[in-house]
Length: 251
Image (tube, rainbow, N blue to C red):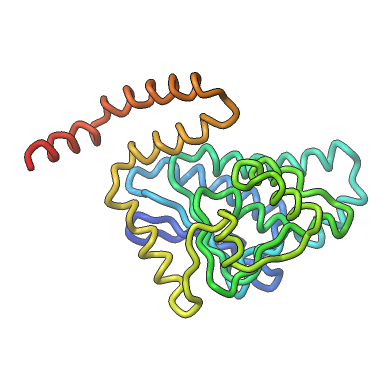
């Protein structure tokens, strides 16, 4: 049985973490499969968005128990390689030209919550629960901090990572970690409806918008404006932009 299922529906790729008996916990195989599949989807011209979801009740409970056991037995270089493997997944999501959407049901905890946070958009069922509980076992949600610093006020981020409590989908939405909360009963239909907007948008414009938004991380105002001017110029030469302008002028 594959630990990752990839399905396509109306120009959207749905990636399902398929370890329901393990609450879709992350192991090396699943992380590598996600990276490989995302890069393959990148090459498909007819795909406009990616949705990551979990099979069964939960989105993802974090690291697999076997991974945690290995942590205490591995040397520093082995542990670094393992950490960098997850890091490269987060970078793959960030650098992918397509929007990557997390569709969270049940629990998204620890590395699972990190995976959701790494996505461009997070949609949650009303009963979903989130949390970064690593501190409770003496661990640190270290790579997630790079994401939280870009999503939350510093004091709220500090509270989440140093207390390790879980919180509801509604609380996550108020914080800005979740874009939309949908009712449990029709969650998957609501996700499909929400994501369908991308099939009608010019892929090049979405791609350049994502690239520019994240490229502005950590640089000054002047540099941000300069990059914006360059991306603006590039967009003008795309077929999507020229077709869109022509269509608009005909109205």
